[in-house]
Amino acid sequence: MGKHGRSRFEKWLYKNILDFNEKDSNSSNRSLARRFYEDFRNGLIHEGRIKKCGQFSYEFKNTVSVNDGIMLINPETLLKDIKKVFAEYIREVKENQEAFGKLKEALKRDFQGDVEYSGTGAIILAK
Image 1 (cartoon, rainbow, N blue to C red):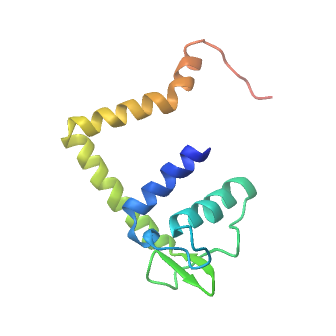
Image 2: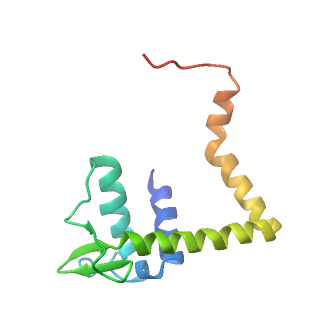
């Protein structure tokens, strides 16, 4: 996921999960959305760990907390937030033809290579 992916990820968090709108107290020029992307998403995907001492914790009521410079994410409230936003999005896609069209085009764009490859008839067998 390049810069475009990071930007899309951060914008989505910033827009949809209000706890991520705040500035990161450890950095004057980044939001908590960017910090989550860098430390949690990138850490887990690329290094198999959460970076900079970040933690998942059920001990805080907010989705995002920063305590002594450490980012803490409540996975239960994060999941609730995501489910709520997803349900609203699904309702919008069902009721709004323009939203449906945007989803359709995004899926075509994101999976174009996969669809083209599947049409070649090539099969890859794992050894």
